Image 1 (cartoon, rainbow, N blue to C red):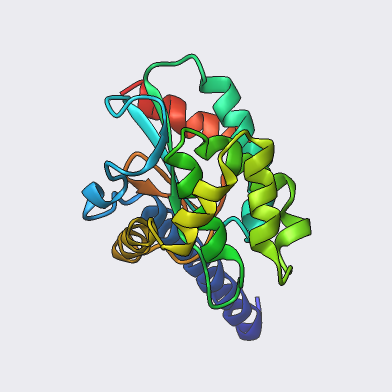
Image 2 (cartoon, one colour; image 1 turned 45 degrees about the horizontal axis):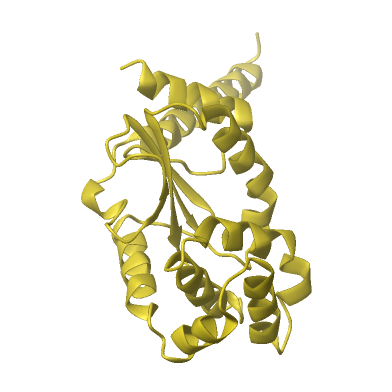
Length: 215
């Protein structure tokens, strides 16, 4: 075989091996337990299920984020599958990207005002269902108060809480925890203390959750 052919084979082999190494390094980074796992969920965090559950999925999300909207059907499938499993819980942390999503912070505040009256998840769902209506609106507060009214909440109480920024400290705590945990953007999911580098498919979510349940 000619010397040039051997050189070409060697170059291809180096590229292939290098790619495999990079893939393995990436997978290891994805599966490495996060430091400061206590920052994954706090007492104020919106949660479905028990704090004593064996498996907890945590989402750092932004209600105005298109990628979060795209991930929402998968999240709903996961919640439906495990809704009767006492060893599963789901936590949503507000991580509004206010620099690029002008109404995200306000939506986060309204969600927590609704949470104070037992309607966080209903407002959470309403925001995603109507994201295209309010995402670029210059009058989003009126739209949000309209959703609150439809959910049976006291609109005046919600408005007063938002105007007083009553829950801003909770959002700031979520943002700080996200930064501590290395959240790169939204949505970012953690399954127990393992950060996922992208949104898992429903099948992958189930596989990862079942692996944790079996431990």
